[in-house]
Amino acid sequence: MAHIRLPEGIPGILGLMASSPETAKPLNALAEVLLRGPNSLSAADREMIATYVSSQNDCYFCQHAHGAVAAYRLNGDELLVDSVKANFEVAAVSEKLKALLAIAGKVQRGGKQVTNEDIARARHQGATDKEIHDTVLIAAAFCMYNRYVDGLATWAPTDPDLYRENGRRLADEGYVQSTAHLPAAQKECA
Amino acid sequence: MAHIQLPKGLPGIRGPMVFSPETTKPLCDLVQVLLTGPHSLTPAEREMIATYVSSQNDCIYCQSCHGSTAAQHLGGSDADYDLIANMKQNYEAIAISAKMKALLAIAGQVQKGGKHVTGDDIARARREGATDKEIHDTVLIAAAFCMFNRYVDGLATWQPSEPEIYREIGMMTAQLGYVGRDYKKPLQAIAAKLDEVEV
Image 1: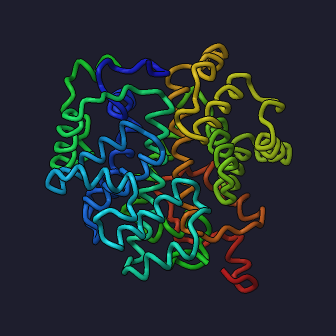
Image 2 (image 1 turned 90 degrees about the vertical axis):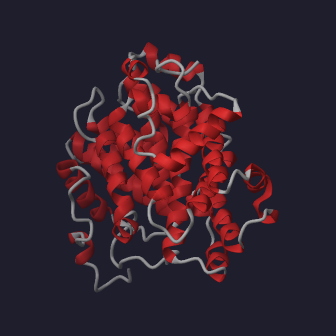
Image 3 (image 1 turned 90 degrees about the horizontal axis):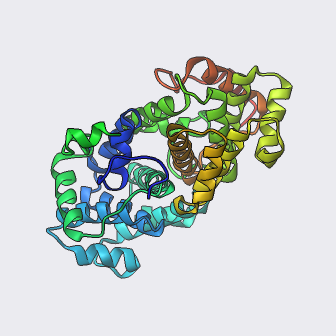
């Protein structure tokens, strides 16, 4: 049971967003620009960073929600997403993404954990200032979203099909409208 | 030196904010709705939650800015600044409401990780009169500062130590809030020192 009264049957952060629209707006706007805005990093790579950090934070809802977006963007390659969570250093992703995931993993433990060597490795693989900036901010933002979702003990369903459907919707329609598909009655009961 | 090339002379989050205006807008909108405006928790109380979490995350810039903003909301006297310093050391022992202590306890658990918040933590806050909205906002403020602190430290931004810099930031923020500000403009307390210090 969640720590506060939330609309029934709306999972994870979606229930929180339906019940607190004034904070949902900037939270969705931030996810939209970080994960779907114009960027030299692909949307799949950015979702992978979000997924990895959420997995390190042991947030079931976020790692499966964003893992599903990443997989959808990679033609359904859920095994690749799983391999990044298990050990990104041996996963079939670019050396640049590995270096950025290493930075994201440091940010998850704490901002001061990021070393000059971590940054040098990313630069060596061609990462730009903007890519390093966005990696740090995506990782930091998911340390927020994960704590928001778990700190209020929200409900996380386990049916993979539900996450696949949500992943498709987020990839195609974006984050700003992330609660638009919910029935009005559910939102109103908040 | 910061991990990426940032504008000179802008402390803490201000460098990355000017570097990346497209992310700055939602970040400012978020902190504005969380820490300012009408609420059953005062702006000082919400700034104290932000300050406490930033201190637990050992982020010098954020704890100094928000601590100063909290002190300014309380009146800006030396005693107000002392209260904030003492809160960071041991909030259970200072002269704040029992409800605020319970909310700070929840914020401290969120800082460690979302799953650390227990039914007992929530029950204590409710016993002291906290509402669902106050608990929700406490969790989200604490979570948001786990983001802001990592953003500021993860890029190794410049974080000066002079108290007058943070006094100026606190005064301006308590007065003006977070949105619609020119964060490129140099702080007076820094402009006065630009010739002396390397920034």
